[in-house]
Image (cartoon, rainbow, N blue to C red; front, side, top):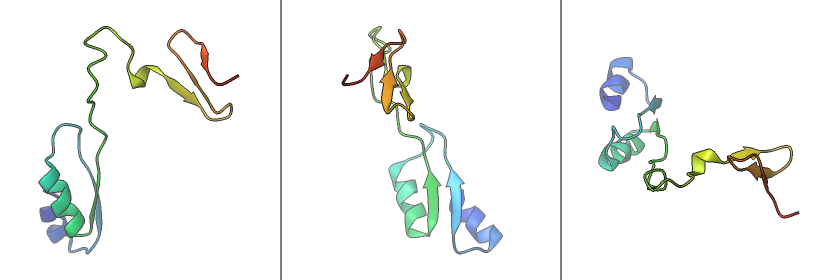
Length: 79
């Protein structure tokens, strides 16, 4: 689709967005080779949620404090 859009728009470079789970690595490679920047979210590979454990998404980074907060609101910091 991205290659078709690039041709239809008659542009050399293009930025496209793909949904998590709806792409193949060969398609991303084809985009890169055609100067198309494919923006794709990282796949969710952790099975923690299914095991009843916390997942990376449950922890929130606070840039101004350079620390993470866990789901219980506790600081995950070195002090």
